[in-house]
Image (cartoon, rainbow, N blue to C red; front, top):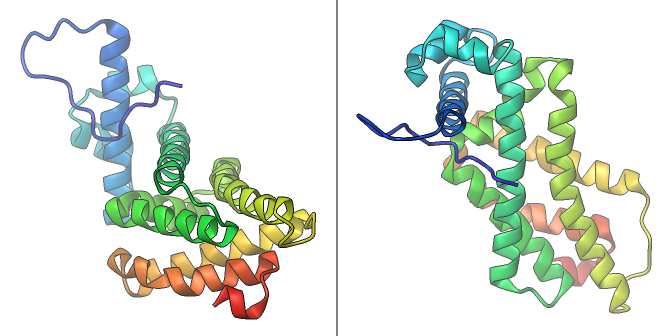
Length: 219
């Protein structure tokens, strides 16, 4: 899948891009505008006028690409999900964790790093997506499932190596991801995104414990 970055910009002057490439760049600019705007003002106060002014595109162009503010946010969220998935995959490949506990910690560290690197993404995923309304609930669940899949992979590794027995009910992973989401959101709203890395030891302990690690090995 060709995933546009969230900070694409059209080059100045004659650029020789195809119409499809121009549209992709305009979409990327509108995604950035949406994230920046809701990070500053919250989801509901943001208008289409805000977005086109920030992205430096015309209102007509906006409506050629999206039906509404909601569809722009949904499309941007889809891109965020894919970026998070790729970043997690790259981090895990780079770390090449051999132990399932290490895989849990590596996944959590990589995810928190993404949120610290782009606080607008952090706020969109963990705060504003809850406020935006039920039409975006499915996109948020998909994002949560990306991380749940990493936790399942870690548990499967432990079962395959004989360190744990399984399988675990899906409710365990839902509970785990919901708890992590709650702690991240609380940190964003009370201490800010820069404090997110401080959560890793506690989040790792919680994750390892829920996945079945013996108490001494989860610490």
